[in-house]
Length: 202
Image 1 (tube, rainbow, N blue to C red):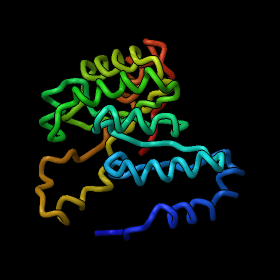
Image 2: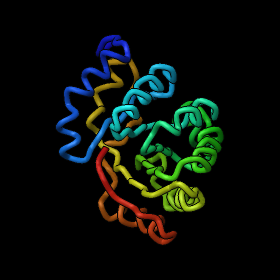
Image 3: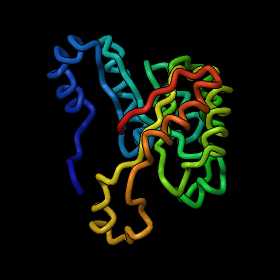
């Protein structure tokens, strides 16, 4: 276990200490995880406090929550960073342990009330690195009204030591990231649908 338990007020104090820096850079606060929506009351308290102080907020989420939870925080969030793993439900289930139907339904519901969503897609060799999968996700993104940008994030091995620390087998992990040429090919599936698409790190 890394970190410590903190009440929302203490977290807000730490945010306010850095306010000068992110105001100078036109930045703000990003709530990520893990999954921030696993702690909706705590998150809502912090988002409300930031909104009262005109602090820009971003929420990085995988969308794995109830629609009610997601829609309740939506008015308090300036920017959603919405992570998609793949379009196929069965592949998503095999790779993550859960299907993606609820995640995709949440994305559509969110787009009905929010107009600043960035889709983030980690490109993982052997999991979702096919043009068919990227075409399918591009179709989803293009059909979602609130999507403003798409970010394709190449897999990297910086966390490869983590499975061993958790007593897991790392043998099935990819050994190298996708090539730049392949990432560009994938990006074209999104730009062809009029989506503002970026290649970047995570």
